[in-house]
Image (cartoon, rainbow, N blue to C red; front, side):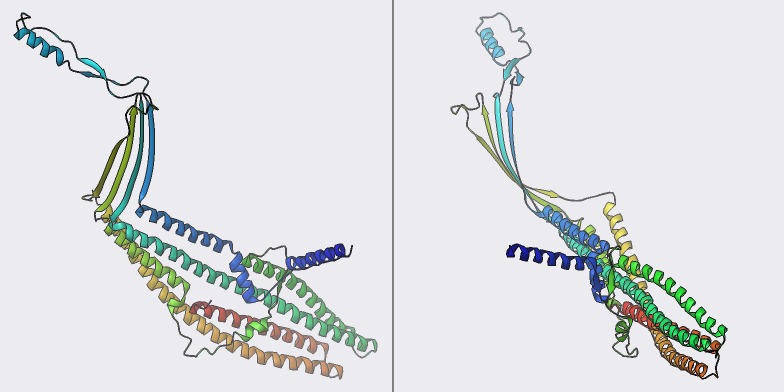
Length: 462
């Protein structure tokens, strides 16, 4: 009984833990990126492409491996084939009879020949055939091209992983900004609610007008309306993050990292000499470079096809021909063994190889131009990202000062109003300025983080 209760308790605990794990997931930014890379359908398809490339290499290897085949054939002749042989015996005998003057003249007709049957009713053949490639100029170059193709797909996966990281990072940040806005708005609403209560008490005491209370009440309603709108936006941005992560949309997702946490890692010294552009650090560069190598090896492969190809072969056959198949006193097995070489020499192919080489050279030239254009584009992207980052730093510093000033004005307005030397209009005006300053600084923080992400992308660090 006690064992049963313990077992049921353990089972319930496991079920409870599993329910929590399934029903709720918490991610910091790196965990969200890792999750998305593990569950991305696009990356899964590309990984299948790598496996497909491996299978193609194995298939291509098979061209150069020796091939061994066996054949067994049995034939039963219901009617053994008949052949017509010329009648060379009758004329010879007739000539002798004429010479011996036993016949008067040599003018006899001997017909159309003698029908004879060659062979046996039962024929059994068993053979082994071996063939192998000895030399083919294009084969070994083609094998290298297959390996380069697999490496190309692998590098494309690295490029896709970087793109997934970039998209998830931006979606994660967008969701955090909305979340931060909601927290600031809730804090402002709580403070304004306290002001409203105090002002309402003062109104009851007859020291302020009803209009002053109504102005604060209108501000509260506006904050409530803004909160409803932000709640809907928060749902949209969270779903976008789930989509980018390939996370189930119907399950809750918790972001364990705050905007401040990410902001701390976004400050860099932009004039640091270590921050230098290296186009080769970009995953796109590796893909283009691999494509160039593939084009170069393709040209070699077509040129190699001008060389002769040499194949070797060997064949051994055993043949059994009997009138009665299982009569051991009849004929025995007759062996036939052949070995040889086949040399294929290309002479003229109607300019097929020439046109293929020309096409491959065009592809190579186009890819080299694409690499050059990519390097120029990366340089421009880096310079723009660096400028935008510097602007974001400057803007954040300026907006921090504006927020301090807005908070000071708002607090002064409240004190003046309580002392009877200020108006509710001053409070609402200062309040709007404070909210705008808070929104501006959140926007500046977000811009700083995003420009840091763009800079990392330009440098190939993402």
